[in-house]
Length: 149
Image 1: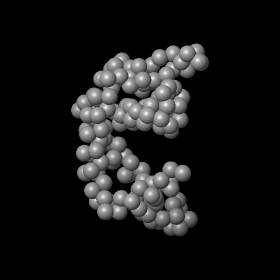
Image 2: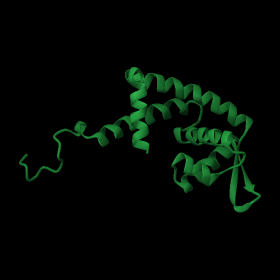
Image 3: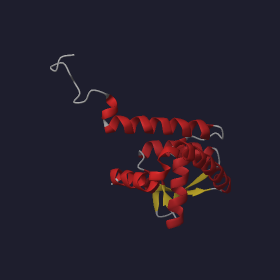
Image 4: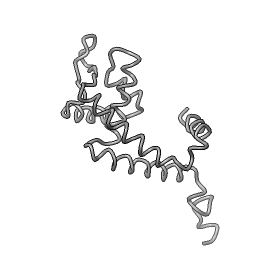
């Protein structure tokens, strides 16, 4: 291929950090969804359940908007996923007494049990998936945090 017709500034996609991050993310999500699917959950459902758990530890009342902001998820998608979790009796959505447009979220006893079981699965998947970087975990996590910020 001549240089005028070359589109990318690198010869192989593996030279691009974005491509590598995409590949890692896709593999990790696929592994998580396969494992969590055995208990009828998706990674997105688990992530919102976990986010609700962590937010609830910090504040008494958590709204859908606060959860979406915390999880960096789209408000409409968050609402749809929460509706599914509500049907599964994992969470409750209650009208916010201070704002008729907002809904407060509460994880149910069944939801707490499901989250505990799902976390065991997530931890097992993570332990296997990240085994090759575990000795560099502190540096790896530090780099990820830099990217998040």
